[in-house]
Length: 278
Ligand code: A3P
Image (cartoon, rainbow, N blue to C red; front, top):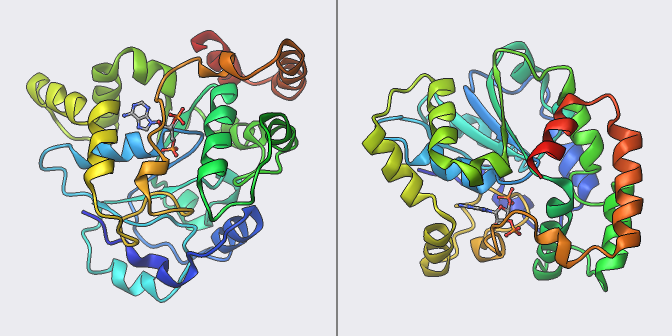
């Protein structure tokens, strides 16, 4: 179920600055929101898993970035267990979310695949600046000059909280490898019992092909959005595979990327895990 319309008015062109600053201005406005999930990629997938948990009684709301403050009143109408999708980094979250120990699910994907995915998203999404070439986009990505900022800083913002009890970190590649195990992790984290049969059903309903098919059948609904940048779910389900980056990176681009990765992430355990998964 989607409440959807936290920010109907503010759905025009949104670049990083707007997205991030509207999130920051929501400080102290969050009350009793129980669950939240955020980037680095695979947000729709996680949200779909949660939506398909039987008897979970969780309301999926619109992204936190859609900051029409008046809509907070409406949240009172929904059940207290809510999922608030967001791509904001940990240090941009409203302080209440941290203080109230809201449960956070953070999904991380190999940044090379994230870059490729985002490149296509930019190309397809009329609400984002035009991008001429993959090479030009990669430069922006490496500089962190893309929506939601630098992948590296985003992950680093979570690093020191990775063992917090209220945080579950999921790796996209692990979800691809064993979706049932990931579903089990998510339901356990949320404190919801599910049978093996139910897990199989969730796995089927949240498969890439099923979600992509459903997206093509759905009517576009501006009130039904996980991403702050579009209500068109067709833009989201592209390939859904691991390792597509190999079809885009030249050897020089890979070298530059790896050097930056090593420099920025040298103390990061999360980054080491990403490397192991890739
Ligand atoms: P690709 O562009 O590589 O296909 P987000 O939901 O955070 O915007 O992430 C979008 C990426 O997640 C897209 O990657 C999309 O295809 C992928 N994705 C969404 N649902 C998926 C699923 N059920 N299985 C695998 N990948 C999925």
